[in-house]
Image: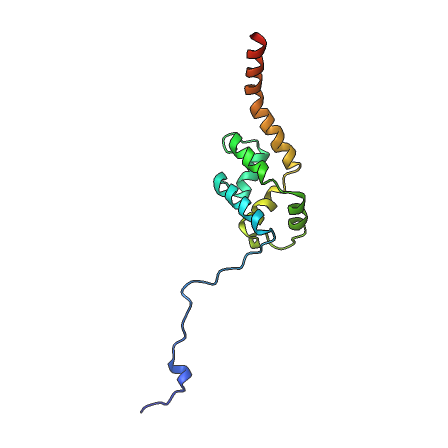
Length: 135
């Protein structure tokens, strides 16, 4: 009682062992993306963590060194234009784009970073000035 089955039934389909990776949206040029990715790896903070720490002025999470790094990758007017026009899901953006888009939620970010850095350096600067006046 042999049953003749077409060859298509006999061959097993190969299954992909790894699920298909979702293609992430890249809007920044490669040089800018790499610069942002380098900084974000050094920060060891997600965009959301950085945003929350900046808005809360969390000195434990954001050191002077991290402030300086954030100032370097602060969203530019070009970034704001490109990312501001993006209407898709935030989770669909590549890492660098998602990080900058999240930072764009902070009003006057560059000014905030500059003022925070000034505040951090103020005591040290005043100590130098005081020593100069006493001499």
